[in-house]
Image (tube, rainbow, N blue to C red; front, side):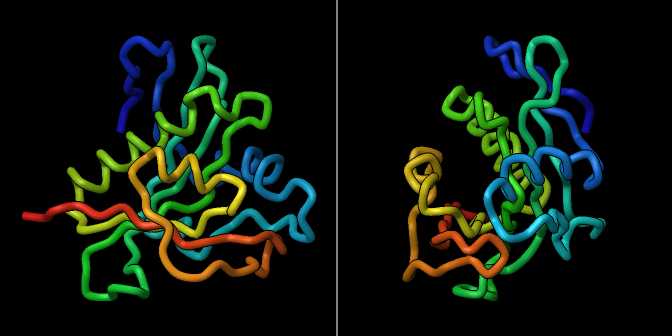
Length: 160
């Protein structure tokens, strides 16, 4: 994937390596948590992509990773899992996360014709995921890595 400008936003989506996501993952996703591990088992699989969003000056402001992985709630449905999404803390709420979700959804739909996209989301950002078309499913849980409350979120699509 090449750099793709987001019309009217001054932001550009780029494809990254997993290593290029680590700094933001650490500073945002591990801030105040007991873990400093920012890697995921799916990071280096050939079916995983890592996206970044650059601001007008070309500075990386947000990252997300998208892995082909079935959702345990529907293991026979074609699915992609969103992992490791992080936006600079001072820029959260400024549209960077939405740009990343939209780009990842487009990739998942265009490349894999998925029936759903799922993620385990911190409870603190569930409203963001709902605004992006995800629904909260199941009971909440405390994530072992972060010690923070989470829920599973799912966004469904018609396939074919």
